[in-house]
Image 1: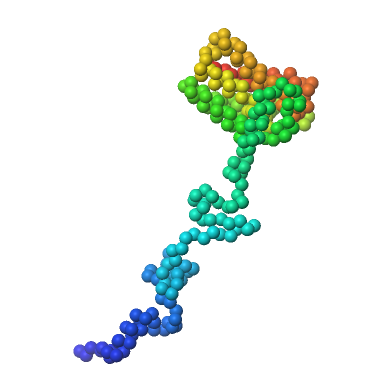
Image 2: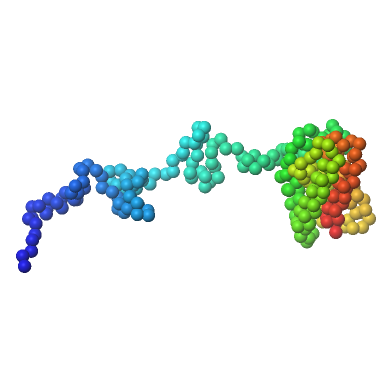
Length: 260
């Protein structure tokens, strides 16, 4: 029936020591952990880096610091969300392989194919740019959409089948051969006159006598440009008409899609 109570002087000393940061068995001078810092996420120890922000034991709230990357460039964690990234990072179009100046120069070469071999720069024939052809097919589908025709499936389907057939024909005619990417690039760039025909058909009635002149002109223009590129690239001067015939059929299909 006797209750034990510590002497009053010892209880007061223990309370004062705990309030000052000392604990039994804890070295003097070590800061107290922050509230909730004894146990980290998942039950781990809360003494990880950043648990103690200073003598008071509060978490540090300083802003994101730039990280030093290899090569001397800096990367900011906040800049990643704002679309900034590394200081020496190239533009996004260059990373994607899209060169707008090159697309514009190759487009001019397609629109002026009547200068013979001298009108075809060699670097245009050696690249396999697919950004321009895919963009032109998208533009053609958008123009036809203005007429109330949803023809994206027909454009990409006929384009895939036609490019595959031209790839096979060109490799049968040539000893050096050509890859599928260059074939698609040349045929896609030379689709520009057909796009112009589709744009005119939105404002004019090309199913009558006017179409009898515009449709063959657009098909022959595209055929001449693409055949010239293939002949110069593969050295098929003696077989130019054999190259031009399947190319003409290819663009005739797109002309029919654009008009009808």
